[in-house]
Image (cartoon, rainbow, N blue to C red; front, top):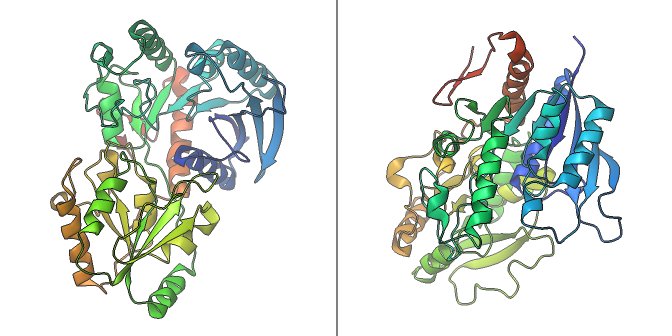
Length: 423
């Protein structure tokens, strides 16, 4: 059998990598290529003043060609979800590349036209949902006051207090509902995401849970971890979420401010592109030794996780997955986390330990104190899905999508509840 040619559409792609969904798109693509039975071509966006608007620039990274469409910085509300210029360019690329399948991964700003263009050419499509862009114009179901919306299911009629133009929001919602119906299969990274989005009327009976993979630790990680702990035995906490309410920073700051001990370290990762997250510093007067850790790439991940013993994941909204949580667990790093949607769908999550969203700082403080009291207590790495595992699952879904006209039974298929049935 010849290699399946997959056209992967994602809002960003190397060399313009940003965000967890883009990392998953890139790593999944590389894992598919490594299998030897797939060929992947990417198409993504950039906004570069030095390039002419709606030109296409070809680049390549890790053996994967990426066609980058340069879009203008200021686009209309409508163009952010249905851009005819981008759709036309995507159609031209499909005509030239002739892929076997289109994988619409994370396509906010690119728009839903990729599904329309593929449908017009009778190319099977898999749509992957990574946030709530398809059912919420604010993308993450976060209200203007910075609080989680909490609708379940989402009804556009209840969005009046959040959106600027109700008529435009309703037209967007209805359009994206129609576009979702064009996908042959829709994947979700968690059962929570599947249930919320499908209950909101999006692509019913087409969904399947495809858990994101993570980069597993390199063989030398345990040695790095032991060496750091031997050099400095203090318990070290890590936080990668940034200084925002929705990621729980005010909760973390308040919990540590009232600590009565200071025999610990805290590493705050600056995930911004320009190093501006923690400038000016917001950690004056907090007990313990606080340091800023620079943004890191996938290849440098072990260097960061080897330095921490506990990951703080204090998200104040219902997320769809929680990549950092799985990265930490795979490396034997304890996780203190909130009860935040799809982030809790792992074997290490214990209901009694999950911190409710909007909980008082004292609840987090109690778990911090408990971790300090128990230190040192080495944590056993937790088995998590790797990118190779995800690629194997995705390959089955690809074969299913390609076989739909023949109505063959896939090795992994969707049921009405979205669970994956494995052979």
